[in-house]
Amino acid sequence: MAFKKPTLPSGISATDLAFSAQLAVVPSDEIFLGIGAFAAFDADTFFPDKEIAAATIEDSFILMGELAEAPGDFGSSAEALKTRNYTLPGKRTNSVSLTIAGISNLQKAYFESPQISGVPLSICVIDRERSRAVLFNGLAWTLDWSAEVDGLYNIVISSEFSGSTSQNIYIIPNIPDAE
Image (cartoon, rainbow, N blue to C red; front, side, top):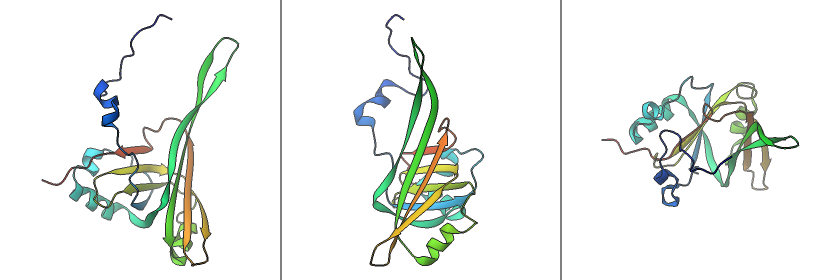
């Protein structure tokens, strides 16, 4: 194959890829829980400004708690299929892990209940200023907990799914102030 300059997908320019345009992806303050999935999520509809973002969260989610000092991570990797002459892209696996600090016995019991276990959940992670958010849409989550001697629980919620992230992870890097 001859060398050529890559063509960027529509909606992405070379300035979008510059280091100065990069942001911290995951805000690390509060984490909210909603049951089910948004059929179609549009950040401009649900988070057009900070005031509407706060109202959407209040109307659609409940507060799970605050993210821990090491809040977790998410990533995506593709397996490679190898032949004698080529390496082809294979299945894409995506993983999410979030750590919630200092929840109570009642919260732990709720997170372990049948209302939460085994059903698709949407989780919104947002900063206190309501200026950045990440929505994990309609994923099946597992819950692991641990406790320290001081009596506070730390909960790690995790999810893993295959395929594209375009309908499951929405990053909203800049929620503007209300006008």
